[in-house]
Structure formats: C-alpha cells, structure tokens
Image (cartoon, rainbow, N blue to C red; front, side, top):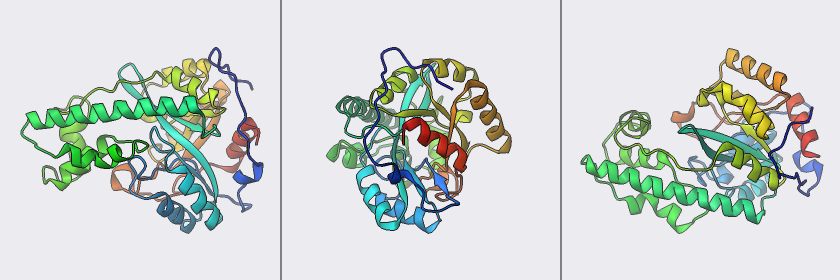
Length: 302
C-alpha cells in the first residue's frame, strides 16, 4: 500500500543495477544496521566487511550516524568478499526532547542537498560534545577535548558523539567502562548531559526522500513513544525496524503488527558497533527475513 509523503518530497530513484543488492545465497543473512569508525563503531569499513563475511552475512547495510563517509570503502571490501552491500545512514532527529533515529536506504550518496544537511548535523554534534566537556571540566574532570575530537576535526565527514566522550572517560580512569560513563555523566539527567538540537523527524524523512531514499524508524522500543509511529507514517515514514538487538520476541511481534496495521515496510539488523555497550552480538546476530527484504527492494525500484 502507498504511504503518504511529506509535502513537496518527490521520490527519485537512484541509478544502479539491481544485482548490486541481490544476495548470492538462496538462504541470505541480511543485516541492515551496522556502524564503523566513521561514526561510533570500533571497526574500520574493511574490518566490518570482513567480520560480516566471516559471520555468513550475505547482505550488509552500513548505517553510520549522520555520515556516509564509510560507505565507499565498505562497498569495495564487500565486493571483494562476495557480500552484497547496501549504503545507508542513521540520522538523529529530535522530537519532544527525545532522540529519534531515522534509518535511510537506497538514496543518492552524492545528493548535494543531503550531504549539506548531514554536514550541519555533524557540526551540531561537535558543538554538543564541546559543551559536554565543559560540563565535565566544571565537575573536576579535565580531559583534552582537542585530542578526543581530533579525528573528527581533521576529517569533517566523521561523526562525533557521546561514545567518544565515554571512551575518553574510561581511558582517563574516571569510570570503569563506557556504561558507567553514561550512567554517571552522559545520560539525560546526569551532570554532563546536553540536550540535542537538531532536525525534526519529518524534516529528516523529507531530506532522505528528496535524495530518492526510503526511511525507517530505528529501534522503536528505545524511542518509547509508540504513539508517534502513526503520525510519522502520515508524514512520510516508510518502514519500522522491527528486528533489532534491543527487541525481544514480544517487541518484534508488536512492531511487525504495527507495520502491518499502518502499511509500513519492515527493516532489521544487529546495530553492530563492535563493542559491548551496544550488545554482544556480531554482524548478522539479528537479521531481516528475506520476504521483508524483497519488499524493500520492490519499493526502491530495485
């Protein structure tokens, strides 16, 4: 069924052969949610592709936060390893002072408008991280912010975030692990937390649609506002990430039903970061069933 689009968001189809996304196995293992060092993952694009191939993943989606900087290298590595590669992104929107993560797929990686928007998103991230360091400093925790931010400042296509601060707190001996860093300092209500400023989900939907893509609501159980999903669908949301490492069987079943009720597509993946803070499963530990993948391809015109 057709999903209403945000006003003025005409859909363009990216160019490219359908076979680029075709799994090379009759029993594919499809993981559409992973991260690299281009944002807050611990694997380089090459290493991610190698780990995915070793785990039997046949279709790999890379969805770094607010950047597509890792996609080119990951595509080359996947081609070498016989893994179908899907360039994607996870864009952070803000609604009701909550982060709403929006996954995008099948968009034009070279869209000037989308790349400019992502540059604005990353600039906000740098400003937010600097303010968090200032708050830590006011509490007697003195860290070298320029050293921590250096990779992102030297390469503006890399996306900084709170995990970078958390790892610096661990390295400095101020906390035992990243989980403690978030619990004591970096989560909402904690001393160093700074609310995010950013685009609304509706604006993100429109930006990705303008670049020819499909948008999915990432890990809806973490948003904790299921009542928002129907209005999001009316505003242009195409899919829900029903399969995710934070979803148990009951949550997956619930979001599959929500998708069916609203006529939305379904996405899924491991959200692999190569760290314990995002779950211990590897690439492919959560996978999207083939029928849902085929429907995504059909919607994308692939």
